[in-house]
Length: 373
Image (cartoon, rainbow, N blue to C red):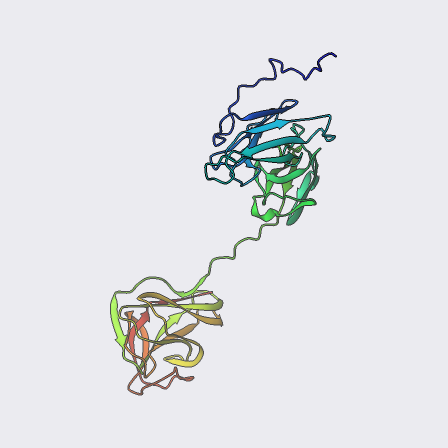
């Protein structure tokens, strides 16, 4: 009876590629399926049975343990077409030469069937992928970016890309979609692609879709306009104690709605300060039209939200400063000694009076202050 031919390995099948660096064992058993190579150990560095594989055209895998049993012996691998009807199963046997671990050397034999799930076939087919939205052309606002992808085994990830960089996180399941906020990029031409990959490391990038981002750009609000005064820090140092109020005449240089009053303070600052804007009686303040108090003050410019108050260009107003009675400290400020001012002291005021109460007038003004829209 003629001897059955088992097969032969051609010279082109042998590939001088090292196994995984942590696959350490003596006398590994080699099993081949086509151009795929599997190396089984009798025991690894942990004295466990396992294997590693190299699929065609790919690097070696990491070592996979098939058992956590101590198996201080060798492995025997075979594919038996007479007894194993599933040709993709690899029959693997290994033994422990001293299963009692007492030097009696009583052996024990084990068997494992390595199935296709643990011995996968090589996959060299890349996925197919295409962008389905948006279409080439104008986009604005929030736009949906979507794609379809398929693979002979399975797609494990799809990544959208904008101008070559990633757009969102990689998606691992269909449907593949992403809400793109186009306001995050500059208006103009941009490119979109999608890249799909499979478990074997094969990948494909879709055809490029070119879009033109056209978002309405909201202009920034205009800078505040100065209605009276300026940011000049005057040189004359002045102060008032708590409970005394002083007002300084200012002339509106522009018409507009006053929103903020800024006052320059020297150190130390008081624990609280009230500022107010009075109308003009002709020679002194008249009626309080707006006021604001702050308890957090700093050395330098302090802004008080005072408005809105409609001011008329050329009209006179009075800026008043008061440290309320009971607050600590004095108000240290700057004035010019060139314009009208009014002082009312010695009455322990706790708030700005709604109508100016009288008192003395002088030429201490203006104070270092200005009003803006």
